[in-house]
Image (cartoon, rainbow, N blue to C red; front, side, top):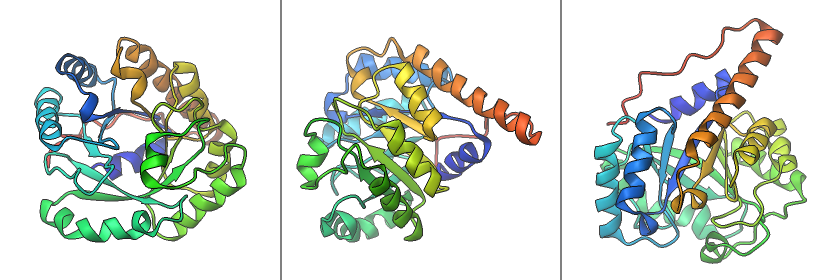
Length: 272
């Protein structure tokens, strides 16, 4: 199960690093290098999906990733109802709560509910919030929705709170693939003050420094994708920065409450 990992990390102050892989942009050599990093403990979760995905290619590359990195959970991050694959460990069941498109709030979820159940996929109800990243992105175009303005943290916070009250298990804030600007610290901090759910932040994170800023503002897991597609050589530096943010949170908890520092969960299998 993947969601307990996220909940445990949230409760313990451990920060997580997720790598998003778009199957249409995947390369065998890049996948192998990412798998090696995962086997070295540098990647906590793989997210798998994109706005447009060639199904046969996706199945092939997902099988390759699972064979090379079989202890790291792979979670589907689907851009359409066609991107379901029972090889994965879990599914982010996205509801685009920042938009007003009923098809993406509940319509498509109804279409695939039976398939998800038959596949025995762990479905993680996710309140998906698009934040303006400075330019139109694939997800905003394909979803036909307007992102929340980057300078309106109160709107983002109220949207996330509504998602929590509706029963969402996770909040995912996304500036979109190729965003000029990542989700601001003010937005993340505003949402963190309102909800106690795990918060995932992605889009436009291109440096370890920006990753730490997002984590320090209240994100529990950051997602990097585009920045690793051409060159994944800087991932160890990114992972070290994420672990450093975890240590700082753990130290603060120790000083304030006398808690023991977080011990990594070694029980994950990444398999059904």
